[in-house]
Image (cartoon, rainbow, N blue to C red; front, top):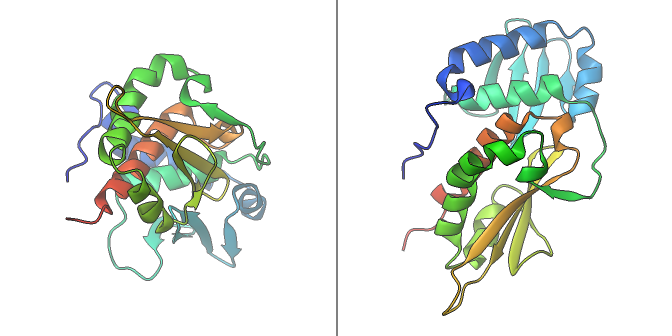
Length: 215
């Protein structure tokens, strides 16, 4: 299954190397790493390591050279994931969860970006899980997902410690096709930009899709 849905007009996607370099520079400029760990939910292991949870796995950020490694693995961390991890860590404001869920269109600039978000996240989500929503519960559990009380089937997954994402499905019938939506805590813009939310959600959906059991 190939994840090749990046958009040609996205600076985030076009300039992975530049995005990573800028995120690297933002981290270097943080004076109080311990306080930033508090704001992001990361763990500070003195003297030169941060541990941050991303999609239910611990990643180590080493300082001062700044490299990102998946705990217990020799596999190379994709640059996209490195950028998301650094963006989350450097931008985190420590805002408590509000408990209020909002749709993508309610994010800053979300109305303009929504067609891209629908194509990259909602559409593949519904296409792969709409006919068999119960599979969503099983594969989401691998990422620490928990069932929620929305739609016919829904799960909430903490993509990062303070970034819960709720995936909602409605079953179709003879007249209506399956439908779905993706919701966020209202505090999410204090942790990620709207474009980061798009990339993160797309990454999450394709990770779930790849975990669907083969028949």
